Image (cartoon, rainbow, N blue to C red; front, side, top):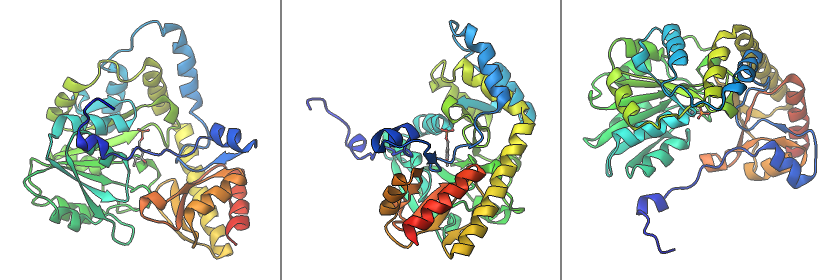
Length: 362
Ligand SMILES: *Cc1c(COP(=O)(O)O)cnc(C)c1O
């Protein structure tokens, strides 16, 4: 290759998404396979979102409202912040990308838990900055160790709550202790992709910190509980000064008109959200009880997924499960060579998963 590429770009390992269903069926010549690998909503999209999308199809000749006026207004009212505190993204992934682009220069440092969401590392490196990884402690984010890694070069600290792939949450007390004496120049990003599923009572409430003027950026998404992963829409809630920075570098039409109306309708569809949350909670309890019965070790979590210790190569189990038509996620590239991660599916999908797992590991 003749073009000259920065060393830091060459150092990036591309993100490996969960295997798509179509790909599995094509490769193995099977039908009716199920996917429990990407923490998607098994119920499909909200019916109200589908209706809103349908009603907008005839207007696709027009550019979207680049500011997402109506969706931003609806979100800000719901959350209790000003419209100037909300930035929409093509998935919350894009908000991470906007933050790393706007806040980092070559040589800066961003601290992140590992294993956690792989996009932090990729996007920090894309900005030419340095990822400072802090291992989990007993599957939980080790805030004290993360704090110890702060240097004058630190610009961002990423926290995932609940954490992906472990499902653990940070308590209010732990977060208060962490935030104390954090230099005000540092932006603390709290990624809440799964916050709707949390049942733990003492989980930190990130909005309180934003209301009280702390430098926190909260990431939320329509991809999980709201069932709109394919639409690509998420948002960040942040101090106005940071939102203004992101709006300078943001592409003018980063969220499509379909995504905006779908998200807006999904926000109104409380019936769907409640149905989703109870399906996930019941599914988790059912899966935990079933795994107990099978004597399989697992780690309960606060999200719509959890880890299972298969006590043999997770990559092998992943492949064997594929042959049974069940897509799970091997955690080998997340530092857990013998764990798989599954998300809750429909009840019949959970049963199929358990049967396949029994065949593969017992
Ligand atoms: C799924 C996920 C996201 C977001 O995804 P988008 O589809 O880009 O909104 C963000 N963070 C974590 C930890 C996730 O698991």
